[in-house]
Image (cartoon, rainbow, N blue to C red; front, side):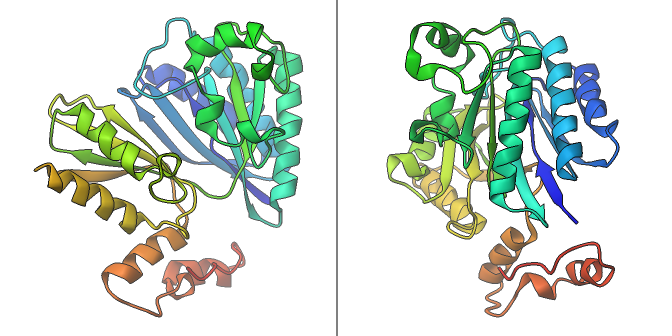
Amino acid sequence: MQLVECVPNFSEGRRPEVVAAIRDAAAAVPGVTVLDLHADATHNRMVLTFVGGPDAVVEAAFRCVQQAARLIDMTEQQGEHPRIGATDVIPFVPVSGIDMDACVALANRLGERIGSELQIPVYLYSRAARRPERVRLPDVRRGQFEGLREAIETDADRAPDFGPARMGTAGATAIGARPFLVAYNVNLATSDLSLAKRIAKGIRESSGGLKAVQALGMATDDPGVVQVSMNLLDTSVTPMHVVYETVRDQAAEAGVEVIESELVGLLPLDALVSTARAYIKAGQLESSQIVEARLLQSLGTAEPPPNA
């Protein structure tokens, strides 16, 4: 059975009726199951996770983009999180019975349809990128909505892969294929935003920090709390506990404590197993030893979990 995960991010986290309308657009597609919804008012961002067969997932993603374009005006949108459009990014993730190349094909198929039918500029990123400078999502988002709105019409290097070289109120969308990603935040007990930005710069790979880690320092809705917001692109390369400990230790050097960490959306089982294995020093702990994973496998609803 072919199963694909799709995790579109939308530039709306403050209006419950808009969040619900976008979620319902995906849920209404036969063969699609919505697994998770995370909406954040400070970031003004919504992360939706759904799974299904390839055709159903592409259709659900298209309907979400269509709904977001109708309900979100990027000329009025504000929030902490970087963004280029009402539907900011759509990644396809292979889960079972399908490989990364097939997900790249899905990204192209959806991008062509959004560009032609909705007249929204589309940039292919990650494994679907056609140009090396578009592999990293932060590079695609350079200048955000406001900067890209001008550059797309004047800079040939910023021309989209699909759709018009101009942006309306829905902005632009990045579409790609990638492995599982963990969106992970660590909140610090301080109002010093410069500290969060300094730690983020020090740990992200692009600045010479931890491999497969993207990071930004952000404010939160609590004036006494700042956040190191991260995307962990490959937890087999840099596990969650290594990221947490690095942020914790760098904050401690400045006399600041960690309040809590936060998971945005879902994560694969092996990411938790590797962290548990490190903290309880269980050298042989593997995903296949988790009872729920074995139950799903025995019921025939899941492939054998990979050993972390």
